Length: 74
Image 1 (cartoon, rainbow, N blue to C red):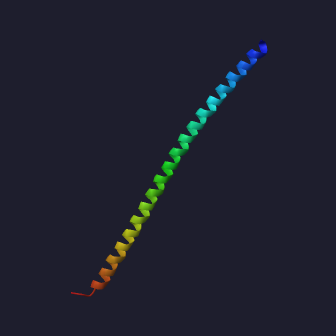
Image 2: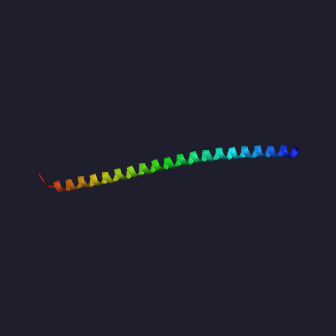
């Protein structure tokens, strides 16, 4: 009888441990998902910033070209 009681206790303990592991995995999955989303958003912002810088550089070059073309003209 005592052996059966120990088996039941071990089974309950194992079940509790498995539930704790499942909760930890769920938390880790949620954190990984959140970090991936944050990383993707940061990469998108970086791409947008790079594109803005390219556009501004092109605009500046065009303005410089126009200034040079108009220098010396009345």
